[in-house]
Length: 526
Image (cartoon, rainbow, N blue to C red; front, side, top):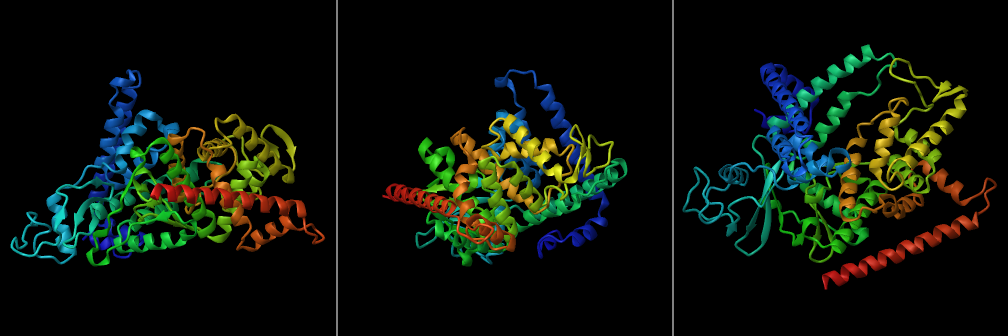
């Protein structure tokens, strides 16, 4: 009955109808989540004064998130890359959630494989699912008796065909659909109640639709339940980044893929934990470049690039894994992000404020309040100044943004610092979280966490800059074309030679870097 909820991806109305007749189930799940959160809070606080070597709270946090199910594991995976948010102690434990979740029983996995692939014999010699013919032809010549990795929604086995072909077989957790759909219902109910409360208790009003945010999260996770779609996503992602020359994805094996089984060729490579310092930096730089190119050039972004989902192939190429969670970006948003990257690196906060307006982070005109007891206003007494005119508000916001960024540690080199500053400014300036942006934020916060691990001085904006410039030179929206025109031509349509020369020089430098990178990859392959 729960499997039917995933037949057409996320469907809000279908889920509401399904669980409205099962209120006891929803109430029980809400109670379970509440008890876990309260217990974790008490445990975390109680160990605050303990010596670091005696604390067990990070391990207990990891176990509890695993017990709560896939949605909470996803939260833990994202937090595992953010020591600046939750501390090194918890991060190290939560990293286990990327590849070392608690697996479900192998006997259940064998039954799922046999059912999905309509196989009536053994899975491999000596491995016979309940009800299958032990004397039948084995599906594989060999399969690992236990999973080699267990993630939030499935676990992976290594297998070998009778022809000697090595494969990776991902098997979906049997309770995945039920847990995800139930957790979304709980989240949607909680956010709906919070939205209603804030609309009555906040004089300034409340425009963010938290229900849309819950739906966006659910849409992304439900995508991961469709293994046929995931296989198509992998092929599309690889094709979209072929121009880089170093991005690879595992090859899908369709004849051994089913509703809850995804089979790909085995990839020879290593994860970050197995790389030396130089290899780790090279892989991370390629990953940031690839994801930035996706964000500002192709519009098709891997939304879950944690350490367990990227590898350095034995041939020197960057290998992405797990394509259930993907983001699609529109032309105008790609161009805005490209402009934003350039503005961050140039510390041009006026342009950055304009980008925030373009992507829907802040209003146009900007709105301000001293605290939650007031309504937002667009002029007058703003940020300690009196009689501020409407046209003066944006420069004032840009000035405050500049001051906050410069006072924030690594403010001009870390995406996470920008997120922290905006969160602080959001207490007085009206800001929004457009639902489409959630997965993109996850992508770059995750990448930045990996980058900080291999190089504390890693500047994500510098690595992203070449692709931002390339996007600016190939606009697709009317506004982007106008920006390019104003960059190259004067108001009377004369060519700005100095600017053009600088752009050509930047492009030549980028080409030289790409050539050197190709040489390094070739040497690694040799």
